Image (tube, rainbow, N blue to C red):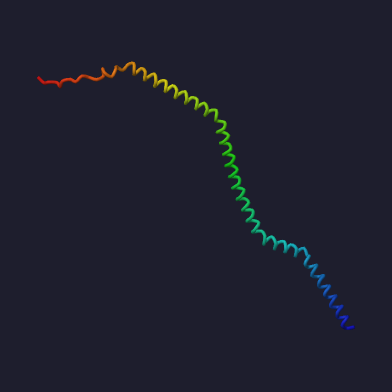
Length: 130
């Protein structure tokens, strides 16, 4: 009987101890301590992730700006095809006028220049001193 009583007392003490530990473990101040501990451990990693994300965002914004600028330049080039066609037409006209001018100038020179036989001069005697 004594053994059984001892066993009951130990059982009650053990149950009370377990209950006390359960109450202490769920105490609000203990919960706040655990929360603080968690934040202290995980905060540096979260800060690093935030910094990385900000850097990636900056790089992405730079890339987006570059692509938008390139698209704008391509659109401007596409819109300027009218001007390039106009320049091409004007250059072709200038080349034609130059060719016509050269051809007409060549004909004038041909008409104005005496035949090659009259261009050859007869040898002159060296001047004599008297």
